Image: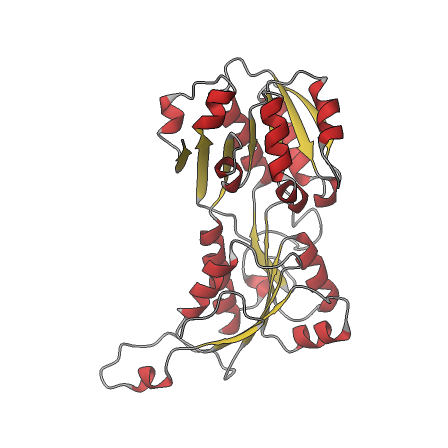
Length: 319
């Protein structure tokens, strides 16, 4: 049956008669536990990767119970729920931190785009995580270099770049952008984004007379997206960040991983663990499919003419 997108608890299953039907195709290897349980943790509520994750689970060919936790993670009931799971999916750092507090033995599949898993001690190495956690983590130096390269293609004579960074996500993204800017010989100044109205940060940012703006991804950046887009446009500041929603909503450029693909790949991790693989032996992987979005209306408002070579590579062009 079709799984409702974000039920707190649901059962994913194909009809039991399918496997036994005469002439049916060979079925995939099945887990030893009758009905494995997957607990998803996402303190901010369902994420964009979740529908693809659930859809991929639904296509595995065996029943799976799914329970979602998004609040009350410090309560005894949450610990009991996680303890009964076959696998935990934790999306973004608050969920990963909560999952690690709740269990040191239940396998955890993590999905995060801001952290350095080795630097934080989440895994021993990318190739051999060595504990109960594995998953998908973004290559920070790679994405940082790409953001600056795309800005340089779109903005003639790019020399001075402002970086707006949320300290709550840790230093990995900021350090990667700083290193990429130095390598590309760009002058970079970093400004912290705090909860509340971002006008104060933009007032300080305007004083550097930047040619472009990089917005490190974080839940706070997403929450303040509308205000950040408005302020960047008013300041005539070409900007780039990770998710295509930014360009769709009026931001200039967005480049980042395909969240549907990440959701499906997380389901692949879950499948392997349910069938007996240990997280310690499953290498941490990087997103491999990326999306580029360009808002031409914003480009015109900024007085920019986007090169055809850049438009030809875009997955989405907003006009």
